[in-house]
Length: 181
Length: 110
Image (cartoon, rainbow over all chains, first blue to last red; front, top):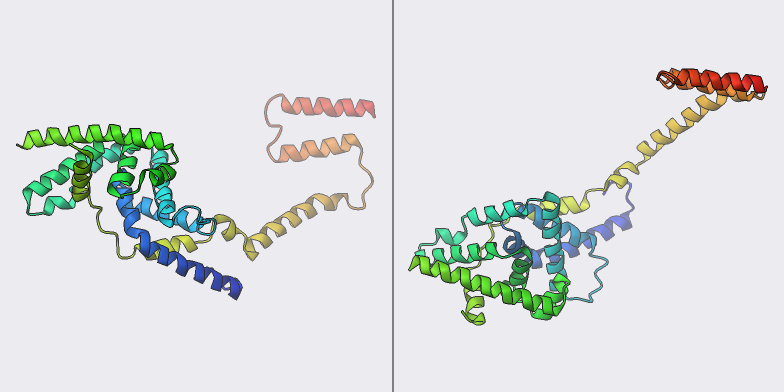
């Protein structure tokens, strides 16, 4: 914004920014959690910022057909996908995801730490599509219809992804349990 | 492991993201307000500079012809050839010959 911008336009922009800040405050944790679960720690801040830039751009075009929460999830997942498609290094990111020391590692409870590591590794082993579905349905608590809308896939696809992810997760966690006991 | 147990385990032990920087909102606010490339170019001085350059170019090209006699095709071709050569055009072997041959043809036609 510069001095030549008319006052009414400046006021509009300020009002829009205030509205956007309120949205930011209400969904920042949701966005950060989702990006982290879907794509790991690498470039986390960049993807979160890109997500908010996209939300800002589509703020006026959001017609309220979907809930704000679903809209934010959709933009978040798409931003993460787009980021890694551009970077072309998703696999490398997931390797780093595995190497990332999770906060549980600082917990005094060794069992909790081990379980946290197991969950992180089990999630990392899933395919991108499965991890997105598990993140939204299981970790974020969206119902199947919302999940299907956010991911823009049929309901049957969501169910089948969840089924295959459940099998893979249970197997990973069971084998980790076996290793530790 | 049944679904409910699995979901409980995942939720209770999901990886937690590192804390966001305290200046995250400032960074985002600055980025959303940054003018686009088009907005940056669409300022009075770049537009005036571009318009000025175009006007000057047109003046330089047009002035020699204002009030002059109508030029023949051959003279026009000759001058275009000279201009092209002065900008480095026609430097490739054969191109100059081809230009001259074209001028000769025009001379014959006139």
